[in-house]
Length: 231
Image 1 (spheres, rainbow, N blue to C red):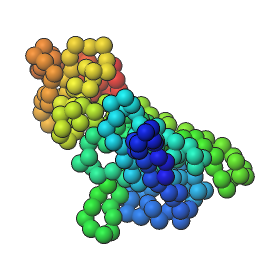
Image 2 (cartoon, rainbow, N blue to C red):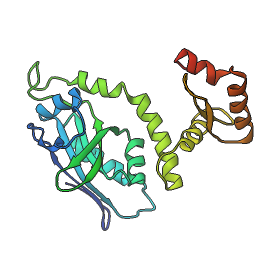
Image 3 (tube, rainbow, N blue to C red):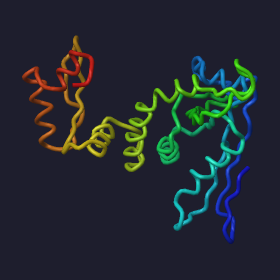
């Protein structure tokens, strides 16, 4: 446990080391990524169970620093936590701090599903091949390779959190405009076997451009679809 105090208690964070038997991951939907399984077996994973922070107008970053201190004090390679999928503000905050969404965990006590998130720190991998203290670079590097995807997820999740709703296509459009030097954005659904159609646009001009591309069969959206890559 880590506690933050001034003249009164500001917040605290709780957690515990994940056992090397991997029982904490029981109920994970699908195969646990090999990198996480390896770090768990080596005792390099620490689970954060709660972060409690009182409103503090002079420091809005207490929660993030608490989780960093808690993980850093235990010298682990990976932080882990479970979050209610409907808790959009918490998910958006964690993703903005660098946490990566790795899947779903179903607890046997009831039909309860949680989002599983991990936070790679690149700490030491005790007991792994190479001996104690060997830097555990490969598993962490593999998770970091998904950082671009994670950043996109964060941007989209933040837009949904601002709307107070589940993530939708409209959040993809808005996030694109917020992150890129563009004046508008649009998303269309395209298929080789069915009719294509616009899904959303951020403004009238973008909407017209989306419709023109699909009508004429040419444009960056059509090119990206046919080539299977960004243009």
